[in-house]
Image 1 (tube, rainbow, N blue to C red):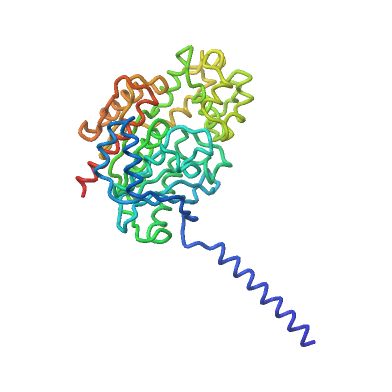
Image 2: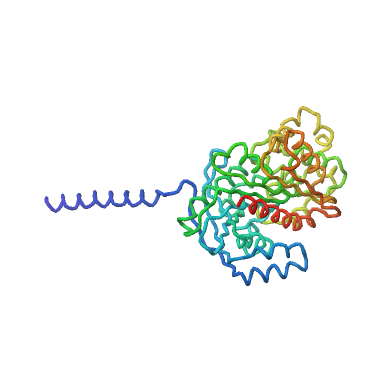
Length: 409
């Protein structure tokens, strides 16, 4: 009898121990941060060599070299964010100086990507990403969000040019970074001084972040300034431009928007209302995270009348049938407002992918909304197409940010 009681008591204690252990494993001291993982490090010698090699292609980079001062550690950061009512695990890169201190944050929003293997956390050795990562040597915490749909969240659809989940995921990454600094990454603190920079899709995401940080999250984060390059800020205007021509060189952009907007219930129309077959049926397979621009474009057509239905081309701007599509584009565009924070807008003057008039019109709208011409700057990089203008815009933007930081400190 005593032996039976002892065995029963042992079973109860074992059960309580297992329950207690599971509970401890599930508990986290953080609200957003999941974990960090060291990815790589760069010495100042490596950084200077990288810049020296790049100068032959982009002479403007030489203006950055005097600010290089310390080595850089690169971490993959995992955090939680929400996609609608669903909580997901997301990821990105966090690059920090190899010197104890409190540093301002620069968040870099990358341009359009369709391949998960090319996301920042999966391809941190990409020379283009490395040129961003090493900015931490100048005395900044530099972030490169993957965006939902890539990295740790590759199983969900990428919200391409869908504003709410894009902004939310970056805001939650900023929160996770504050939790990581001084805890998981010791001797590094986050200074409440935030900058945003991005090009193409990243330019749009940066403009959305500038608006959100100033108008929604100002009590939590101190926005210092932003740089937006070639962003499709007015999506209705952008798609109107794409549908007003007979040939568009990058049909991947059109189909990426349609795929994301359908996945995130931005409009109610069936895809066949917009895309002709066989393109409507193959859409989900094109954006599976495994095919690049060239591979996707090769399965589409640059002929707009062959890609889009005749009914859509005729009624997109006025037919009530397509009102949900128009409303979706407007709601995911950034509406002009009176900004009080420095904003620098750049665009290639010969951009054949994102019409430079998007920047011209949005700049004028910002001024009409009350923004000062001293606060909002615009520069058209004459003669440069979409890809050609990317590096010059980022370099000019970085110097713009560094100048603001110097004046604030």
